[in-house]
Length: 590
Image (cartoon, rainbow, N blue to C red; front, side, top):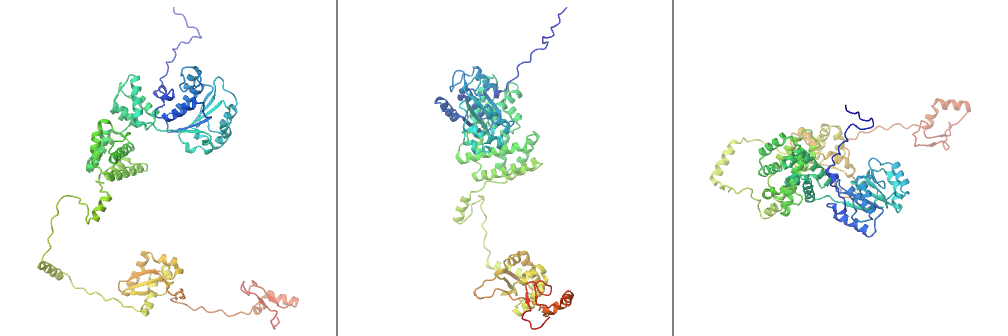
């Protein structure tokens, strides 16, 4: 009979150790392992050698280029149990604790989740305490640009004069968001993006160490896709290892990342080069049937056109070109079929298509529109070449087809042809031009003003009568003080309205010109004579004293107090507000 297990004995097996991703397993352990950051590694190693380590560093750059790794390496180099060294041992308890982020004296803080002033105050309170077991207490703040303004201000004094046992290392991807007061207190290091070849070489080393097989073209594709980020490249390689069946192939990587195959991109480029719009649409159908993203296709087309442009400019394939080595000869042959101006114009079309994709719900239609337009672009002739042909007295020949010479017809044939034309044309009577005088214009001009409407008519009235500038031609001249009226009447639609009104009244076609009146005589009066002035009847003069005596309230006051009217002030009601009348010198008594 089996014995029962004790109550305190675990009956389940311990969980297996979890899988560690490649990005963590192959993280740089020393300055020599920082790929693509050789200059920064040299500066930091020299600072450690000569005991010139600053109290605050700022590491800035794109994601996955080694900022946090460099901060950890610097922390290990300063706190290693075997002494400060540019090559920390990596096996002592301090080095291993720093590598795993568990050291009590090296504090890694996420700036995105600890961004307030309370967290910074806690740091200020703790910096005064010496480290527990290491030489330095090191604060590594990642994404430091996420701190708030008050948090940055609270950190200023501590950052300027920290205790001798404290070091600050900041890491950020957006250095422009950090206040200048913080930047001036740190030594700044800009981490550059890692080259495609360096990433590919490192990925190849990883596959060898992992005992896996990978096609070189697949590794190149992953390296290009990473965009200069080693961490992104290692993550993609991890995905490819899980996706493949022991060997990473180019086709599998294409399917994994949703990219278009290079041969497909080149087929599209050849169809565009030859102007085959139908072939372009056929290839677009194939792209859509594979479920590939239209935005990804345009991105790859822009990259490919950029590579063509660089080759057309320098006759060299760019180092970071997105072209497999096996496709170089095909690429060179294709690049020779495009002129540089055509490639630049094509880049404009592709960039515009990319922008339009963000504002449409039908990306396929927008991409088809852009690629067909690109195929219709043709091979542009440089402007300099056109200018040279124009200066030489001709235009550049578009085709080599000889043009059939046209012979000049004989004089007899000309006369016969003209006589036949004359017989077909019916004689028409053309009304003679109207010769108007100033008196005639003054009689018909009020009718024109009534016909063009009140608003336009009121503006035209300001000019008086128009001047005669020729047969069936009038000039409306505006004095200088009527600039707004001149601008209003100069509108082509309003000029056409005046012409139509005049044509309808006179039965003839007229040409109207609106201009500003030029004053040649300085003593000339610029005020135009009005067309019609209606006399305004003047109001009879009112004697203020008589008007006041007729007021009932004034009569009552005179009766009660036996008073006299001495003065009538302005605003009394019988006078305008700006007048004043005194009756002191008046001989008549009120």
